[in-house]
Every structure is written in C-alpha cells, then in structure tokens.
Image 1: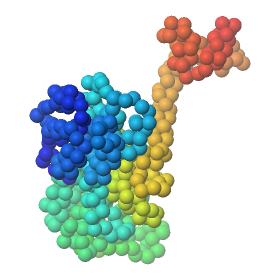
Image 2: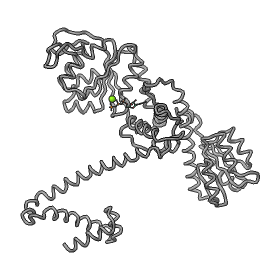
Image 3: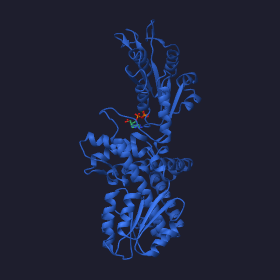
Length: 488
Ligand SMILES: Nc1ncnc2c1ncn2[C@@H]1O[C@H](COP(=O)(O)OP(=O)(O)OP(=O)(O)O)[C@@H](O)[C@H]1O
Ligand SMILES: [Mg+2]
C-alpha cells in the first residue's frame, strides 16, 4: 500500500511569493537532497506547478499584485484536495488567518519567519499531506473491495500481515493442522476462516467450538458426541462436531483452556483421526482439518503443566502469530476505512470515510483490544456522525473510555497503597484499638491525612496553593485540614 509514496521518496515543496528574498530564504533552508523545490513568482506559475508536479506542500503568499493568494488557495485545493497549504503574509490581520483556515489551509505564518517554526510547520504539513494521500488511496481501495454483506473480510497491508497472507497462500490447501496465537481481538477466528475459505475444503463445513465455554464432560460430548445413557442427561445419542464436519474444518478456539484429560483425547483423535463417542465403544473414523487458536501464551501453559507439549507440537504443524494492532499501525487506516464503510452502510448513512484528523487520533491510540476495539470505536463514531466524514469529535466516547482505563489504573495503584498501609498499620492495630477504643478509624485516617499534607507542603516549600494542586484538593480544603491537624 505504501509503495505509491515509497517510489518517490523526495518531498516536493512549492513556494510562491513575489518577494525574491523570501524565495531565496526558502532555497537556502530547504534545498536538501530529500526535497525538490519549486520556486514561483506568479499566481499562474504556481497553479501550473500544482497541476503538473503534484507537490506535497505549497507555501503561498497572500498579498500578490494580480490576485489574492486566498483565490490561489481555493483553486489549488480544487486541483489537489490533499495538498497541504501554508499561507504566508506580511500583514498580521486576524481576518486573513480565519479566511485561510476556512478555505482549507493547513497553517498560517507571519513574516518575518522564525526559522525553526517555519521548518516545523513545513514538516507537519508534509506529514499531513502523506496521511491524507494515504487516506485517499486506502478509501479507493476499500470501496473497490468486492464485498458481500454479512460476511466479514480480513484485510491488512502492513509487512506483518503481508507475511501472513503469503503463508495462508502456501498452507491453505494442505490438510496440515494450524495453530493461531495472538492477543484477544487480533483476528484469530477471521484468519481461521480465511484459511478455510482458501482451502480445498471450502465447500464443506466449517464448525467452531469454544473450548473455554464448556466444562470438561460437555466439551468432550460437543467434540466427540455421546451414546444414549453415557451420563445422566444423555437421553439419546448425539453426534459430535468432529463427526458433523467430516470432510470439513473444525476451529478449536481457546484451546489453552482445555482440560488435560480432554487434551489427551484430542491428541489421539488428531494422530489417528479416530475416536469413540463418550460412553461408546464404536470407533469413528473422520477426515477433519483442525485449526486451533489461543490468546493465552501456550508456552507458559506448558511450563505450568496445564498444556501438553506433545499436543502443542501436533497442533503447530503450521503456526501463525497475529501481532497486536499497535505493532502494525500501518493497518489502522485501511481497517478504519473498511469499518467506516461497513457501519455507514449498516446504519443507512452516507459517510465517505475518516477525516485526516480523526485518522491521526486513531493512529495515536494504544488499542489494547486490538482490531475489535478499533471496530467498536468506528461503530460508535458512525452512529454519532451526521455528515460525510468521521471527525475527532465523533470519537469522544472512545476517549472517555480512556478515562475508564485511567480509573482502572487508579484502582490498581490504590490496591498497592492499601497493601503498604496494611503492612504499617497491622503490627500497631491491636495497640491502637486498646488505646483509643471508639476512635480508631478517625485516628488512623487523621494520621494518613497529616502525613499527606506534610509531605505535600514540604515538597512545595510550604506554598499552600501548589500543595493543594499537588494533592488534587482545593486550597480551602487544604487550609481546613491544616487547621484540624494543628488543633489535633
Ligand atoms: N484484519 C482484519 N480485517 C478486518 N476485520 C478484522 C481483522 N482482524 C479482526 N477483525 C475483526 O475484529 C473482530 C475480532 O476478530 P476475531 O474475533 O477474529 O478476533 P480473535 O483474535 O478471535 O479474538 P478473541 O481472542 O477475543 O476471540 C471481528 O469482528 C473481526 O471481524
Ligand atoms: Mg476468537
């Protein structure tokens, strides 16, 4: 996907100003091996350059002898909506800045320039241009995907995912057992389905069994079936999933949660393609391809003797490791555009995609919940969006959830503190109870409060305003506590 930009690594920068010293300033600062510089003195020259050269960034003067630079900005954006434009002027009027930004300028600078600010502004404009070109390209790609409603497709163009697609191509057609490992929400089930859809077994069944959802006897009955009377509720014979999908593919999700006893039975079934129904003697022979997945670390489960090493080797004839989304951020634009289109259709909206700013926001997230979390965030944003583009404000709910994570962290920190206090208070507790009888609670609370206030005042050299801020309380509350402590 990135190839489109990688081929031409040179940045194209257009500068248009009728003031020659300004042009030579840009020449001095920006003539580097990585940059092709186009210097134009006139309105028409700049316009032609934009149409022919497709620069990444254009720096345009507002005050021109012929026309206003703001007209040029409008025409430039019509020719190339992705062009990042920095407007420059010697006249510091607020209205110019407002008009320029309203017409789609990326930034606005006043002459004379502060050189480091100028370089920063050009770099940021370039980043913005690359991102919006990417959005544009990805959007075209996503809308061209032949997409059947109701069926999820798996996409990704990061080098990590390309390796995975290559591997799918190599192994899909064999009957080799597959093990897929990866954090929750990375797409393990979707990958299992992609392998199945590309295999010679795609006309046959694909059945999924979640090994964590059922207790041992029920899971065995689910997999192998049971005979009538095998256990109390076995009123009639039941055919298990392995038998049901004979000729097809079975997906054993969360395999790491399977009991050791069931692992033994599964291993035998894998090795011989034979098993007995629970409570039965008849040997059933099947031809089933097994794809297993785990979001827990199987190596650790093996060390802790919760998972059989022999089964692990038997399963990982072919092994996939799906990296967390934060390790393949390049996939975020493509996935986000795909989900936008998906939910826009679902809710009957006309959303074309994400704004560059919204995408910037998504690229900066940690995505602990991986692709599933990204999908949910886009889903909520799509519900809120009334226009044609998803904007950062539509992702407010996602940001509030970040606060939720923050609270979880607070809770964790709180638990740690409570352990520390317990260690300190425990040895003195009985003694305190004896001495202060009915006021133990107040005594201890007061002691903690006093310690906190004193530490904060000490750190802030007795400045009460700063100490209150440090403790996250108002200055009045702090004064009140100080008075109480002094009286006490
Ligand atoms: N590469 C991808 N392209 C498109 N959609 C994806 C991709 N990866 C995951 N998804 C979507 O994200 C969601 C989570 O994927 P999936 O259920 O396959 O994850 P998982 O790894 O099995 O998670 P868990 O361990 O929690 O079961 C699904 O709705 C899936 O359609
Ligand atoms: Mg899953």
